[in-house]
Length: 626
Ligand SMILES: Nc1ncnc2c1ncn2[C@@H]1O[C@H](COP(=O)(O)OP(=O)(O)OP(=O)(O)O)[C@@H](O)[C@H]1O
Image (cartoon, rainbow, N blue to C red; front, side):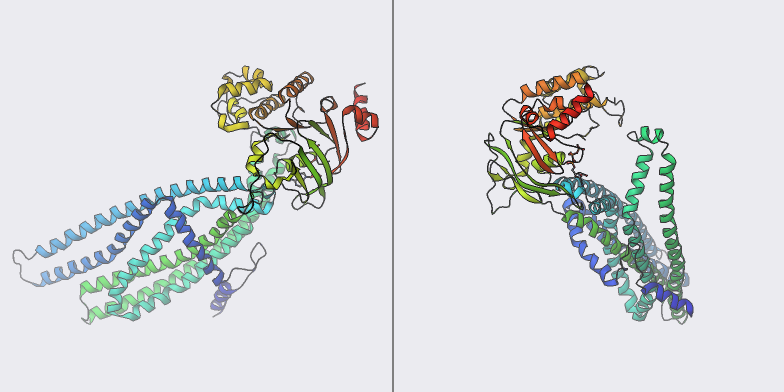
């Protein structure tokens, strides 16, 4: 009897999951089902008409099996009666009527089955599309720092992967209801004959159900625990073969390194999964045999009843057919139940992602939202601002105080990692300070609507995005509402010197740039930078921020860009980050940042005269040119 002990241990043991957490209990598995109503509501919202149609067809279909079995019984009994009677004309009439009825039911059943499959697939596609859109919308609302958290990525990843499999869950939940109704119809006949048969059925099927749900939970845990590694696998696959990485992968001969890592991870997953699926298949075979034994016991019982003449041959086929179908249905319902429960566990991840809330939002209804000043009067004041990145030990900025006056051009200088880009991110409220505050015209930046603030700020980051879009649209992303406004796009291109780049493209503003898509043309680093700069000019922003906007430009282009920048931003506030002192010195004032603190602020001349940090850095660079 050791196999029974082993089965029971295997099913009831609370083995740790691969992610280190204990295995889910039956109660936890059931409690995941609470996600289903919300899920059904989402399906209903996708298309009420398709949902009603789907449920209606399934209800009709649910009644068909019992009707067909019953007509089968009538046919058989009348044929047997006929075979015993003398032939008389007209005697065949009822039989042919029954056969015609069964034929009609068979056609109807097929048509309904196809109708259900069609509505399932239409509803499923719509649901997947709408979910992807919701996913993108929600991701767009979240804060930048949430994107920098790897736990967040795991959630996003799981939510993404589940968009498609949710449509399978939908079909499963609906089939579950349909089969339950069919079972109820069939059960009526079976209970009338002998209620104990129903019990036998349950006993035969329940071990299979427990086994299934146990293995479903194990496989959920395996997949769940492996999310970070699966993200890494995707990353390795992408890095090993993509246009963006091909150059360095080749030059540094990295492909074997990437392949080895991929193999190591994927083999490990394969081994763990293999062990699980083999166990699952073995137990599955055993449980199926238990189910079959129950079925044949009942079958023998019904046959005996027919032999003793307690039921007719027609009833024998009806009962045996009902029992067989019920076994199939019950097995289906129970095993689907565990995969529905598994789906519901995955739904938890899906809803978890949607429950993530951004923190940088419009002030709530109890506080008045301060209108953005038109124009800015005093400017921005940093008061003892400190900022620490999520999961970072070190402060990126600390005790930072200075004023960015309205209408001035302020340059930020400092060594790598000093905190310049971080300062700019706080100014544009991609993050909020961990300590201290930033004031705009005397009020905390948090009192303004972040969306309005971002409209008034134009930022071009050093790691700006090279959108795989036509040249014109690549500029228009600076103000996407104006994407059809060709004169405006051309003007921005002229201001940022991107016009000469675009003039060389075979299809001008319509030329796809970047190599990802057909016919795309790639640009040089400096050419991309000119396009990105054009985005800043697309905006009507009161504050322009350029984070190393000219690092890839040649000396002449850089000089020209800044001449223009000064003319074009007259009266506007601007922040420039640059390591080139030829650029920096054009600013009205210069702020020197060191280890997250402001160490000096003043004009080029003032700072040189002071002979401090700026003067030292300036001399250092100037010496290189002598
Ligand atoms: N997303 C992030 N998560 C954690 N730490 C970060 C993040 N971004 C920057 N840091 C850290 O914050 C500090 C300041 O970085 P920041 O990018 O502001 O420097 P920077 O002055 O702009 O440097 P560079 O001249 O190299 O562009 C650095 O120590 C950096 O490692």
